[in-house]
Image (cartoon, rainbow, N blue to C red; front, side, top):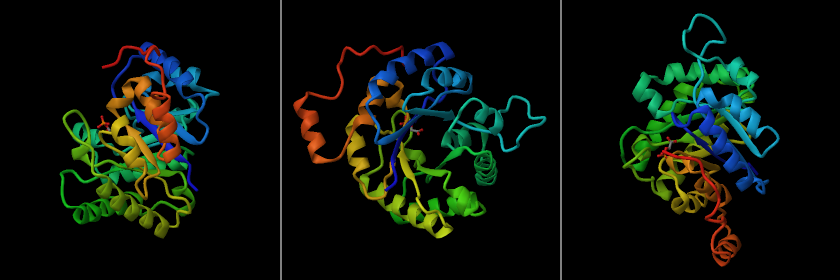
Amino acid sequence: MTRELVGTSLKMNFTATEARAYFQALVPLVADIDDRDLFVLPPFTALWVAREELAGTAIAWGAQDVHESISGAHTGDISAPMLVDLGCRFVEVGHSERHRDHGEGDRQIARKVATGVHCGLEVIVCVGERVAMPTSTARAVVLRHLGAILGAIRPDELARVVVAYEPYWAIGAGASVASGEHVSAIHLAVRDYLVRLGCAAPRVIYGGSVDFDTCRELLAQPGVDGLFVGRAALDPVEFARIAHARVRPLDLEADAQSGGLLSSTTPSPSVR
Ligand code: PGA
């Protein structure tokens, strides 16, 4: 069975100094988790801090983007070997905010995936419909994008790809999470697609307005292999609560009896 993957992108939040405080708060809160893979994607400027603070812990780290070329005249960009050198396990590509802010499209995302997996990174590819639409239409849209992005990736390299289903309309302040039914239908279709491409153990995680209140229902959906958390995880206590969330009834009971998983006195760095 695939290990569940629960992670966050800090997006353009936290200086390197603030990121250190965030990691120092988070590490002890999740130190007991050994049945799930956890990751944090800080800004590029805090990757070296992630390496210092997270090496030897249960939390992997990675970047929020990567250039499609290995090196060269690309002022201001960051290459996959640079990320590998900083100990990154993951890199995210294709996030909707990269599309919104930088106009990235499927062809460029496909090149980034190819470069990332070639360099040994695990690539989290975000894909999702841009506006709300019926599930069957959304499924077709997502599979079309995925075909353009992953169609040329070799089966052995697909093992290093994680698909993050992230409907654009469910992301960010003011948005609301997609329904469990919708998420499950898309995830199962994506899994099928990955299997057809030759991927032995597909990993499909969901992102878009995930918080502690919604995470268990999402994790319980068939086809959901984990969660990609945004705003809610800027608070390390909240991220740790989500990372601990389990869907088995026994855990729910134990959780309720103990009055919650974490003490409210846990320090947290400033969060925006
Ligand atoms: P959000 O972000 O949880 O703040 O909606 C999710 C994402 O961008 O992956």
